[in-house]
Length: 205
Image 1 (cartoon, one colour):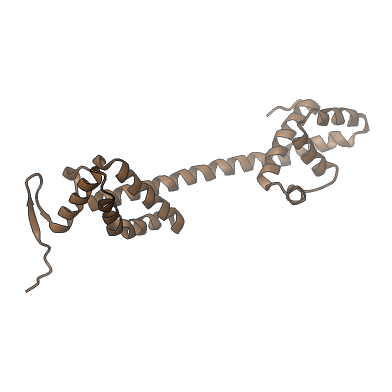
Image 2 (tube, one colour; image 1 turned 90 degrees about the horizontal axis):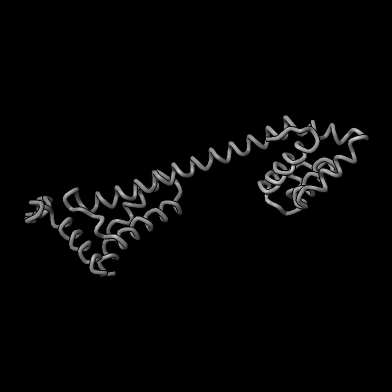
């Protein structure tokens, strides 16, 4: 009569283990010898569970799939990374997937914070210093200096600033008119404004 209790086998290295774990370790041994069938067997066995773990962390299916693929690729490249003294094959694989997922979230959060800092710098430049430059442009005696300063800018920066302050276009309108990404327009504005401030009002960032 079946009791539902897993069948156990004796391992001389680690004592009693169940047949599923014994099979997993056999597959890892096969992978160490370059056995692609062993690799496919382990992948099909645990990829769904691994994706579920990654998905709970990253919350995007395509990212979860990439993490699982990277983890199993790491297994293929370095099967000796598994140490049976430290636990089962399954727990090792799931731990590796979870670790990679958490690392990805941390990297994306760090990138998001850097992007926000850059955006805030651009806003600060536009709000704190743009009016100063516009005031300089509005003074007739300064127009020659302004034109000379603009002529010293790289063409791509000069074009964006001229459209903004002479044509009255917003950065979004410039991006739409030129086909440039909005981030590129903002970056060119940032660099161009820095140079103009140095030339016109001696403010260097």
